[in-house]
Amino acid sequence: MTEVPDIESMLADLNEKRERMRALREEAATRYFTATSEDRAVSARVDGLGKLHDLSIPDRELRSGHPTALGPKIASAINAARTQAIEDSNARLLRALPGFGS
Image (tube, rainbow, N blue to C red; front, side, top):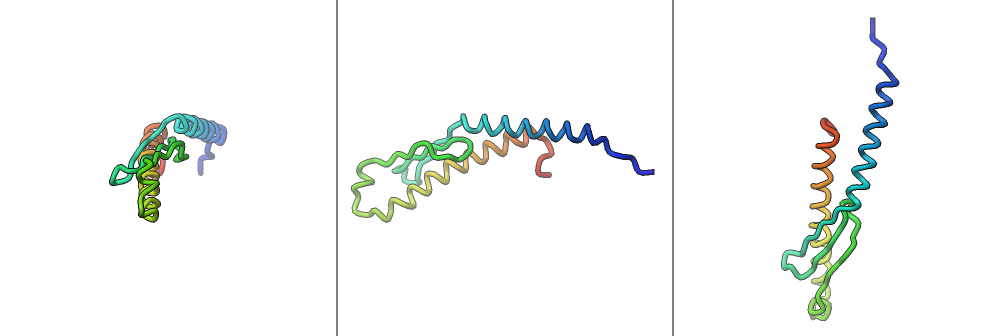
C-alpha cells in the first residue's frame, strides 16, 4: 500500500524555506560589492541583488578623446561587481538551504 505524504509537514517545510529565501534577499540588499574595469579606470559598486549604487569615472576618462572606449569599461566594472554579488549570494543560498539546486 502506498503511504500518503504528510501534506502539513511538507507545507511547513516549504514555508520555512520561503522565509529563509526572503531573509537571504533582505540580507543581500545590505551587502555591497565593488569592482573596477581591467585598467582600473572605472569603479562600480552594487548591492547583493546586483543593483548599481555607485559608478566612479575619473574626469580624465570623461574628457578622453576616445568616448567609445568608456562604455566597455563601465560594463566591465559593473559586470565584475555583479559577479561578486552572485557568487556571494549563491554560496549563502547553498549554506542556508543544503541540497538546493541538486
